[in-house]
Image (cartoon, rainbow, N blue to C red; front, side):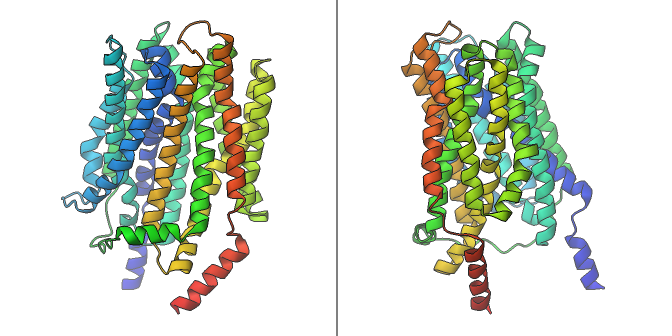
Length: 454
């Protein structure tokens, strides 16, 4: 009877799964809206010079790298009547929404004032996301001890994550135009208000729907710096994966950040940028992902990852030469690019899991926290590098916001969207080709680990 009750308690109620997953709509709206539109907003709406706009994104991600582990440590030591992690959702929800609203304002400051405001407000949003999202991610093990139940929760959460991404890609410019009319400053301000309210609501829904049911968890072992270096340095496949992901995610983030510029200035059809984003991301989620799940099972994760990047390389090259001929031709090319893009969402996450078993097999140490922490950091570094590169290339090619661009400036936009990512994709494919954990090797690792543990 006790066994049956234990099994039942490990099942997460549907209401709790749903409430936990809904929060990721708001979080992904914040992440994707800033990734896709913030650089463009800074330069073309608020009036920050491109080089400093790119630097703001870089500085804020460096701050993320510092604040994330600090917040994780604080959350681990928290004790309250609501649990260890839930209080940060309750008390962080309103400041998080407020930070989203304030980021998209355009106060009439002098240039230096605009630079400071943009930096402070983006760091405010990044800090609030850290305060809320780090405990949110750490809350999953408190819902159940059952690994299958955790997988179903993660599966539902991924659906809502995609919904948040699609809202950011498809609704942002629609809201800006609908609520601002001919005044983009008002439009972005109201968009920030709407998204801020959504983020508050979805975060609070999660707080009220979820309970931390697994109590008295064993405290995490303290890991020395020496052991951390050992875990990473002895794991050659992990290092290869990190290098490949840094290159490929930087390339993808550059392309996403430049689409607005390309449609506004090179194609002179800013209104269709929303269609371009939807085509790119819907294709990746709905068509590309199932295709590459099948391909990775039939071949290998490494082959699927490189094939996706090869598709993006070919499409990006075509965009450089023929992308300015016709706006619908460009959107058609982005459709096929979206198929390749799906591998950046799929393959790295499955490959990093394999490197964890490799680490245990090679060193006797299994440190998921260390490896995933470093992996998340590389993702953030890639996003920061993308904004920094784009901003500096725009500045060096003579880009001036809201003006008729010179041929050199238009070429700079085109290179940002095509040739630089092409070079990064090619380097990433070369690096990933050295990743040596295939299905057979992984089976051997698991078999030897099983024997060793026995």
